[in-house]
Image 1 (cartoon, rainbow, N blue to C red):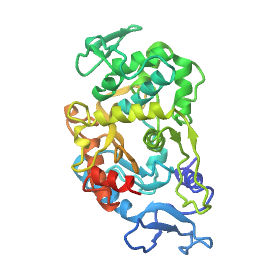
Image 2: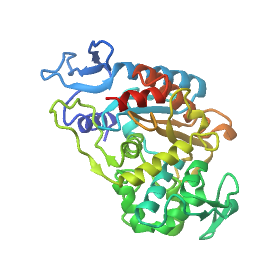
Image 3: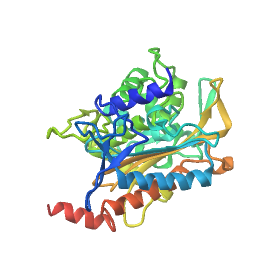
Image 4: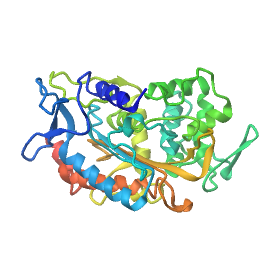
Length: 387
């Protein structure tokens, strides 16, 4: 199927069947001091008769585009993608990608179509499954083998030797071994069901119904041997942010007056525990301190994966880096995913915490200002508690 056909199918899915050009001709709708949605334009360039109103906010879209332009010029990646949504509804607020220097089409919706191994951003599933299946709690101790874990003739390694770690510490320090051990305790059948429950597994490398062996299961736990799209990851982190409900992504403003219900995929307590752990992951003790924003508490997780080669192997020199997170951490209003494919930087610098996290921080800082979430979380919390 041609990419142009895929583009319209993807737009139709997000817009509930409305036939529009997503990229190209968008008409800004003037508003004062409020987020500015856009109105869809038909193929002749005229506003559609029913004036389908998109959830995309022109102010946020500009913020993301400017930041991606800057990052693209600095990092020279094959591609860079950012997408923002409201975790309380699943509405897409901004979506942007920048193509490779070779000149890929800017009309390509990479947030929907780009399939990649998510790396450590996927570790939230092991954490959730460990708690949801009653295998332990936030205080459980998991031995991380001092950084080297032999399994089925291979060796799983951590970036630093770690001993006993709690699930929160495993997420904070991004232990591959800790995530692998949690997934092995969950078991292949339940873990694969969990992947499906979180919205992954459809046309993302999980088509096979064969149960993975222990080594594959362990690799999946830290984001290898499984493929996702940025939009899928965005919705999964949105579910963590909102307390456990997975929403269907939407780009069409809901004018029915009926609030979207979504599907509960984890108990509120598990989601709350994950939120606490993701706040730790962006501290100086975690892997994502460069995602921090002055005056705004954020939460999220870094991801780094070796690029998949044409023969199905993994590159030793090219990486896909990412950051998935949300803000404000205690009252999430925006969830965001940033993915950078093949940044032209030294291998030792090509990590999600060094490449994607600062892009997330720059977007979050400007978004918070635009939506009046700054200057401090304390003020935001006080304002909402008084309403």
